[in-house]
Length: 484
Ligand code: 5CA
Ligand code: ZN
Image 1: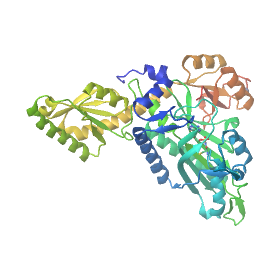
Image 2 (image 1 turned 30 degrees about the vertical axis):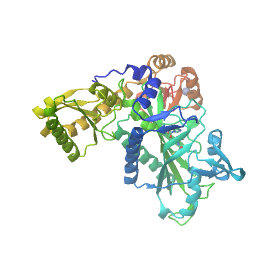
Image 3 (image 1 turned 90 degrees about the horizontal axis):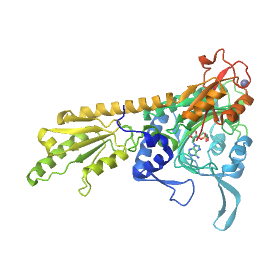
Image 4 (image 1 turned 90 degrees about the vertical axis):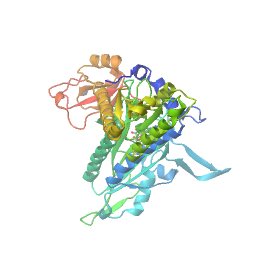
């Protein structure tokens, strides 16, 4: 399908990823002298901006309101919910001084914002009439991660943390909100052509302070999974300590119910990872900073030059009038072949090559980045052809990414099969499961992998199957993978 190999992409994914971030000018990581923190470069920033715009559009249209909370959280707020602080204690950065003065109250760099937001909600929300309330912000958060840090994937400063926080009058309405969050995330990932598996995380691996957690996972090119988003039902776990009390419909008072859901720089990382190939990035046209790059083939003959330049102008007019984001690469010290290579690495979805021959014939050569297929297009048809091509590229990328994910999810019934599949191609394995924590934990040991959780609905195929650990009837399936 694709004309470009994906050998390095899959077999040496970590190196490929580092290479592509640098080669395409996305993110400078490793040179900044604080571990786990990198710099968004101009081209990467443009991609990030389009992704965050997409996220904002989708959340806004579903009734979310963007807010901006302070970065610092006083220690007593962060400690108010005991499970939460237990989960984050080891990952918090503390501000202890202002100049030379020790602070009276230690201040945390937010690792996430349930505590500060719940605190303020206790002043704002008084009645079921104020609900549901859906806030979000897109901010930096800080986590002193101890696992190996990686650019965009495991950061200590997460610079693109979209955290949504909602408040509800009942458990059921918060439950429904988790369902809405899942639909919104599907929408975001679908727009980007990023495939996902949705799992309910097991009890022992839910968010610190949640009643339950639903997670989106992706299979990366090396077969390991990456959690790309989570949605949590928080119950009344934060509203009780923070006293977010509301008047209910029957006029009684009760604590409100909450959810939170977050995604991060990992969305951009997965956009880069899932669509790439050995030549570099392939960016879906809807978020590509440059959708079309025009490479003029140098004209030697002086007399033809003016005619050629006029022809280039015409091409630009067509691109402009079609609202296409384009760039004409006019560098005269760089050969066309080198230009092709650079723009391919940057993942520009379409390249237009034009020389004097095309100018005379009233055509251009159009090359799509995903398959490298070439076609000669008449100038009058260029606008329409490009629009159609953008859709085809998007669809092709999405399809290829889903096929890759689906071919890396394997149903097995025994521990031995699970071990074999995981060692051969990694990915996700699904086993019948009795639902007990003990068996889940033992499976993690036996197959040397992490649990992702179970599908939201009981899968049909486990009917009549047995848990491979205890032999009891399976009530659901359990997913395991080598995780990032
Ligand atoms: N307060 C909740 C919902 S906003 C929360 O913090 N959930 S979380 O801890 O699961 O984080 C949300 C998402 O952020 C995760 O699913 C993961 O995709 C991403 N994320 C978490 N830690 C990091 C990190 N160190 N680097 C990059 N992304 C991260
Ligand atoms: Zn069991």
